[in-house]
Amino acid sequence: MSTSPEKPLILIADDRPSSRELLRLVLEHAGYAVIEAEDGEEALDRARDGNPDLILLDLQMPGLDGYGVLAALRGEARFRNLPVLALTASAMRGDRERIMDAGFTDYLAKPAGPEVLRETVARMLRESAAQSLEREETA
Image 1 (cartoon, one colour):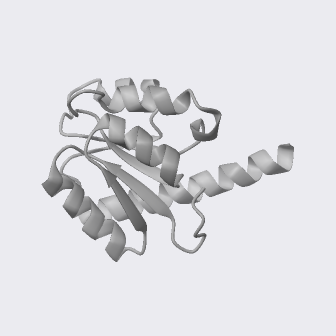
Image 2 (tube, rainbow, N blue to C red):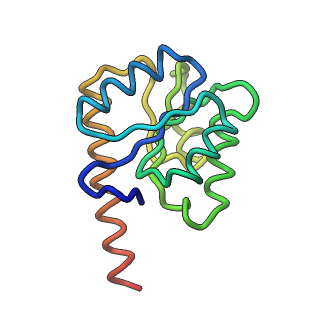
């Protein structure tokens, strides 16, 4: 979706500046372009303006939370297949099912180590690219 095929664009939406900074540093070091949002409304604006290739979305933000952001995005045709990684500090029994049932592509419990984050993002981008090719071939 981004205009730079050699450098995928990732949107980080998290209300904690320290979390955004850590995620940004890890992802930029891995070669990704990054844009940030500090709340759900800003996340929607940044997604619509920036056309990211992947979104990292904190579930617990004030105002519009991660579930609300995802619902709004999935309601727009251009975002229906966009990979969205849920980030949550809550890793309770049943959370994975609830998160996946809501329409997230995958999720990570915070804090996630840099290697796990890099591997998860790379895998999600690969899978998204493969699915895009399949959709083009069957269209």
